[in-house]
Amino acid sequence: MVVSIEDVVAIVVSSAMVERAKYTARLKARNLANTWQTRDVVRKYTDLYPGDLAALAVEKLLVDHKLQVVNYDVYRVESHVDPNFERPGKWDLWVCRRFYVEVKSSLEKRFDITNLESVVNERRIMCYPRREVQIHVQVYYVLDDPSLCSRIEDDEFSSYEESDFLLDRLRPAYLMAWARREDLLGASPTELTGITTMERSRSYRDFHICDGEPIRSLAAFLSTCC
Image 1: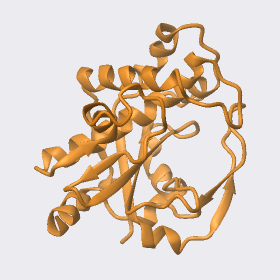
Image 2 (image 1 turned 180 degrees about the horizontal axis):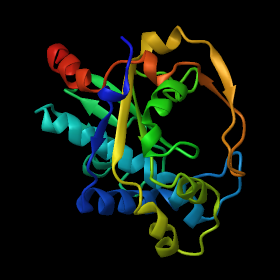
Image 3 (image 1 turned 135 degrees about the horizontal axis):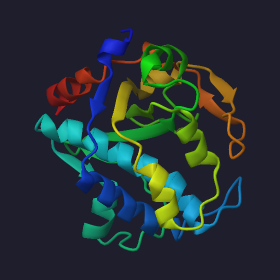
Image 4 (image 1 turned 135 degrees about the vertical axis):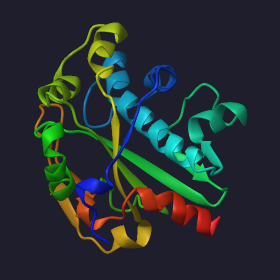
């Protein structure tokens, strides 16, 4: 099914969601390893926060549809498997104790909110080859001024508060589309590089948002299968 601009769902980001994402991102930042770049703890926090907030947005959508959802950041604490957030999360959301859901977030740095159709048609559901799980959901932050997204990914911040000045602008969260693992496995890998200085070329599945499933059908699909 082809996704169009009418299928995009904007989730209002509540203050509670913001505070929860800030809390978990700061805990993770203390232990996040440097891989392809050297980052201080504030830079790591800035990179982690949009993803944690995106997972909360998808969680809200599913909970609003009366689905049972376990968030790994809650699970790791309550189950005592990793209460100090010392290791990477193994999954984002676990729905009905059956489906593992990976949530990817992207900051749109070229188009603004008047160009959501361009985001749908030109951007991808971001999935690394050999990292496919049962369901992938793509979330985008699209602002009035796309240069703010570039600053979030490119600027050096001296404190959490300085970073938060821009991160607090990431509202709403646009839930773009979702895809099954088998759909993504059918798409060839492609090398993509972002437009900020912090980014490097990485391999993703060449699967565009417009070729995914409408986000409103996700809860219905999960409800049928649960």
